[in-house]
Image (cartoon, rainbow, N blue to C red):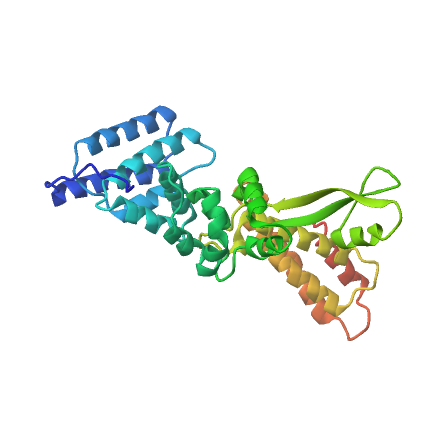
Length: 358
């Protein structure tokens, strides 16, 4: 069933469309740049909804896409208002279903999430065409029986979308599961757990309970069970399939470089910082190569620290000058050193200032 468009107006003047676009752009600007109180936000949305109810204009798609970027995980009320507004704007499009399909396949993560949520409101599972478009032909062929059985939603599919140019992580392990147990059992497990708990994989072990001399069962593999069965007074008493699901957040679909994302950057910063401290505090004699390694690592650490904490720490405003001052002293002193296996005590003390500049 297609999403109905009940606004088939013949009167859609350019002036009316331009006025509505201007109103929505103003809302976009305020939400992005102006701290508004809850009652002000409610008032803004109410005024726009009233305007939309009497307007036949079709809003530019670019404005709708820009508005999807304003969903805020920390403000549930704004999300509710924004979702309701965007739903109305989508319904005013000449072909809502096609536009939602475009959003679902876009590279913008917020647009994908919004489109999936709105499509799921209809209560119909994702179509074969949508599955193939999001996951690829190979994945669609393998996963379709399971997606159909579980009536996978569009939001489920977003958890399965792979990194660009790669297969969905679940594919390889799912094929291994098929070689160990039957498809119907796998379907039941997926339906029970849900796709988002296994989007990175699903593994299974065939466990056989072996009782020896009427003992409590030992759980072993099928090949091990055959070995035990060759013994006297050993017999199979039970059989299980042990599934392990591997779930996690879906891969990001926006254009942000993964290395530049705050969580990834912070992990990298911590590892580099720990490695650098070990290098600085190493009891081994200081060498020219070691000093250059320390400076090279510090260049990146200082840049990353400022990226991560410039909105939280006043130190970020003075850090570059302090670091460059110490770095210049170290390089100048290094250039004065005569060729030797070990560097002077003065240079060693300067390098140790990197660990504590006070």
